[in-house]
Length: 477
Image (cartoon, rainbow, N blue to C red; front, side, top):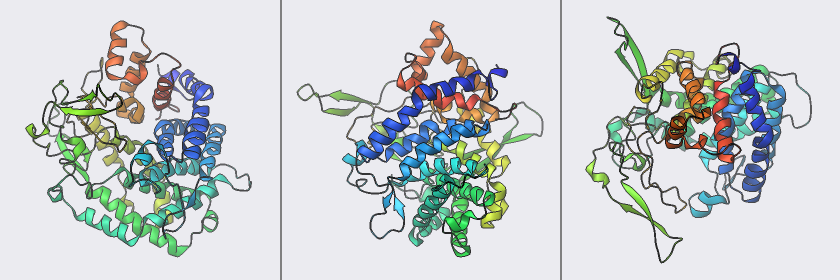
């Protein structure tokens, strides 16, 4: 279906129809008006990025200026919810005051949740960067200028001396330094998002040199940004494990390179304690108390102590979807990062390294079945249970994800934009659109977000995350 996947083709048309029929209103009313404004729930910002970053990337590939302006109007509404950062911290912040996570966790309540802020600001910065290349309207509160100022404020707050000391400690760490379930030494998605924000801010400044003054940037602040960015890039380089493997096609003397992220650092983490268990029986079940139906407790059937930690475990494939937009931010701003911050080009992930990550996914995460593609739970290729009895701070019970339980992260996570994975994305599109019983059963078992009735809100969101990743311009991703 190559022609159907071109910009301007029927699949792109279907995406925008979903957006016009429900996506726009969902963001405007549910995520922003209800959750962010009324409840003070900044996890709404997290979900805007998760649900719609692939849509934004398609709008940019296909050069849909009006659609990007529409997204900018929604993002600008979130800027009105910024308030002075708590304590003596500089700048403005989104403060979490309600919603399930912040209502139940005293640690999060009335604070800036860094994950939400970094993830959403990376989305907003990508949007503003793309718009910075368009003809400027000279309108007050220009979206690009607003976003550049907000990015500068947040990056300034996040690069404290203590934060940079913690980065140096993590750069020097090795997997064997992790002795318990603490995440203190991990490379996290928050680190990748901050690099992406720096990258897209550089893109804005390269496209509009006068923007630096409007954003409150001078040579001194650029220099401090460079120092922080250098540390973040050193951390990513330290946690990128590249291996040379024999060529799978059997070519004598030839090898290929694969890459993984944070390998070995996550082996003791709570969410991965069943990573070595690949059985189908649930290790933990959630039981409802007959006397108090509102009370659900976890009952352990298979103790985690039966399984040794998986030595090389790193990120799961749901979290690793951040690599898609992280690498995109690096690639589109490679020259701007050097121009604006004066960083060493060699400190940026190379195109070869990016290809090695895609090759790892293709060789070790995919099950090698083109007819029935599935994807292992961990980027290392491990396929044990994930997040068994996970506590997200809301008091709910979670039985966890079985082997291949995170497979839906492939279509919704953006991986199909990687050229090596695009054909598998097309195959999954065909399966999710099929009316054959065996296909419907397969989708219901492994890709449940696409198994609901047409028009269902969850299916709408799944399709709007997946379909944009298939659309290409002139055959390019």
